[in-house]
Amino acid sequence: MKYIPKLSRYENIEYEQCGRSGLKLPPISLGLWYNFGHVDVFENARETIFTAFDNGITHFDLANNYGPPPGSAEENFGRILRDDLVGFRDEIVISTKAGWDMWPGPYGDFGSRKYMIASLDQSLTRLGVDYVDIFYHHRPDPQTPLEETMGALDYIVRSGKALYVGISNYPSQITAEAVGILEDLGTPCLVHQPKYNLLNRQSEKTGLFDLLQERGIGCVAFSVLNGGLLTDKYLNGIPDGSRASIPGHWLKKLLDEETKTKIEKLNDHAAKRGQTLAQMAIAWVLRQDGVTTALCGASHPNQVHDNLVALDNKNFSEKELKKIDMILGDTEL
Image (cartoon, rainbow, N blue to C red; front, side, top):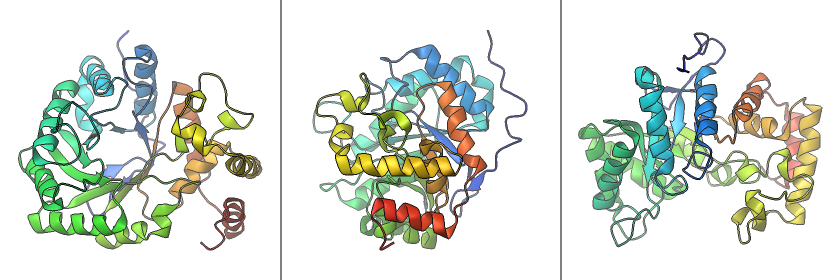
């Protein structure tokens, strides 16, 4: 059956200006880090993307290595774009990234000009598009001069392969340097994508948000549910088949007794607000000045609906925020 997007998809969502640019993003964006690779059920991924688009989520975030296997999330999204969304490309913001290990040898990782441009060319092929809307450098490269990496981003925009560029996982000091280089080149940094959630507040503590606002840069917060820890999934232990059940997985390492206690108390507080823990976690991220959109994954279409409910109550009283700070042990904030 041919997919026909809902005509009402833009009626109940407000879009946010991304920094000082003319690009607007939805308050919640769909991240394709997990659940959209070749190991996953394609029809489920397809319906999840349809559900997002039907509800005004126009921003779909990828990276060269998303899957698994690496590259397969881009291939699957490209297939959906070609087969189902071909007439709606101009209503969609596609972002992808390069910076992590992607292919063997010395040219398939980090931030050299050779890697960055080759990676984007491969991404465009997998996606089946001539350009992406946003292209990010995914992480700082300690061995490549920052001028080279930013120069590659500048070239990518000037060559028409991306409309905008951004950076991800960059700490404050390197962010300031990167932004300055891009400004000098005449290609402004549109957006930064930092990890930010109730259990990881480094972007507040290091002044990154202040810097982004001062420089007119948008912010796409990722891992807002901290890999599912900020949901009800782990309230009663680690379920079989979950990521935290995998030996050595980073989620299992994070789920110590102190974190479990925090999650339980946060869940209780969310219930008092009439929200699930996940909905409160998303709303809390969006309450931060300077956050343009919260990047949320989804394992099935209903999760998209559940995430969108967070937008019904994004307001926090000072008393609530202090209570959350006490639960987290961040009373100094």
